[in-house]
Amino acid sequence: MVNDIRIGIIGGSGLYQMQGLTEIEEVEVETPFGRASDTYRIGTLEGSRVAFLARHNRHHVISPSELNFRANIYGFKKLGVEWILSASAVGSLRKKLRPLDIVLPDQFFDRTKTRISTFFGNGIVAHVSFADPICGQLADLIQQSGEAVSVHIKRGGTYVCMEGPQFSTKAESQTYRSWDMDLIGMTNLQEAKLAREAEICYTTIALVTDYDCWHPDHDAVTVSEVIENLKKNSENAQKIIRATVARLPMDRTCKCRDALQHAIMTDLKKAPAETVKKLDVILKKYLPTA
Image 1: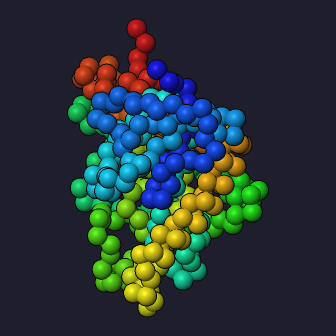
Image 2 (image 1 turned 45 degrees about the horizontal axis):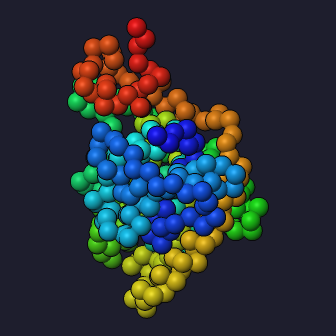
Image 3 (image 1 turned 60 degrees about the horizontal axis):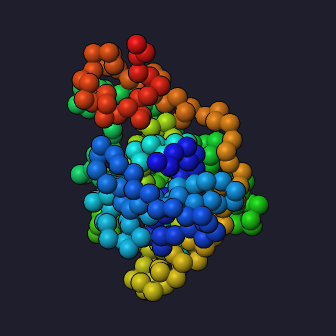
């Protein structure tokens, strides 16, 4: 079994493979939550062993609401991952965030309706801090890496996570703008929540493909233009990811690594054995010793 892979990469729409990945091994990781989106592609990138996962499957056959977020993140945790770089296509809700921009949002707003976004329940209660939903230490490193490869990255902003798979109505888009939202997508919030529960550092690399439907020129944008923007953005995202991986691993001084330390409300000695076993990969360092 492959383990102790400390760096994870999630590729979103248009980023189904990682350029420069060598010595590749396809690994299917068993999880108590079912199957991940795809097999994990374990390989060497910039001298480090990494795990790459195509969020929607490499053939793009899984819609946002069908994603098994728990299996995806649990699989990374089981492999030993401590950092996840998550690339994701987004729409822009601000004129200043233009197509082809790359943004590191630092907040999320949840507009999803049907998704499970916690590992806990069934006899174990935990409430992790989520005021700052991305890892600032990892975001700093990603921004520095972008500068090193001459790819400008914009920092900050709120990503509103909608259910989908349909895009917004104009009324919804204008409402999000009135709420000071900056970007809109369908996937990253659940990943961020689950990564925090798994004590994994997580940051979204948001790839702006187009303006959302609020923009007066929105109807003039063609699907082919969006795909072309996605292709160009994915190339830059790969440059940033490779440069970031080259700077990892690093000492984790962030709060992500100990997110569960004061979050578990249940006495694990009295928790259902079945649930404890199910979450053993996540709870390992907090389980009572004999």
